[in-house]
Image (cartoon, rainbow, N blue to C red; front, side, top):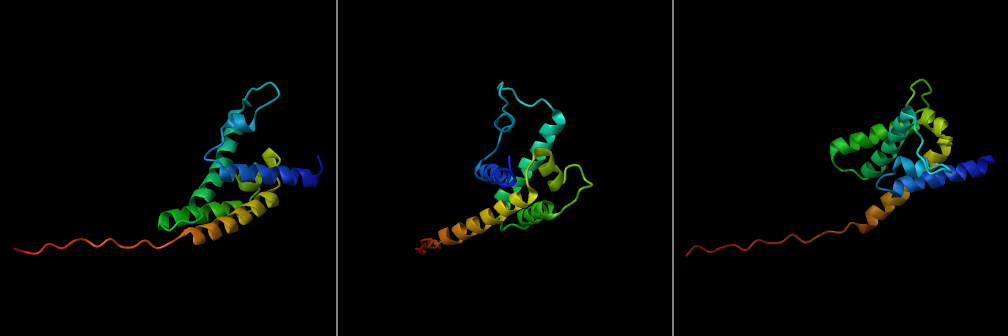
Length: 136
């Protein structure tokens, strides 16, 4: 598989993760025999990676302070090239054969598209007036 095909496969997977409500391990590790990869360590690595994508997706348009903080932490995790921590973004990409730059590119493109859609869909709702009672 050449580099452009690997990058394209990475981008397709990240797009799938961004669109999904969750990805089960069997969707990622289905083998030719239909069994799931049995490594608990690898399953944990996948869970951390998928949770990062999910956190990014859920909090990209956050208004609440704690959710904005979670988004900032997740984005920082994606952007750092920390090779020392086993569960760093770049190490997880390496373990799964993903191109970190390709994943980051998809995330940036998705964020731009998502923010534009969110801004276009917002509209103001009229405030309902409460009926006032007159004292008899």
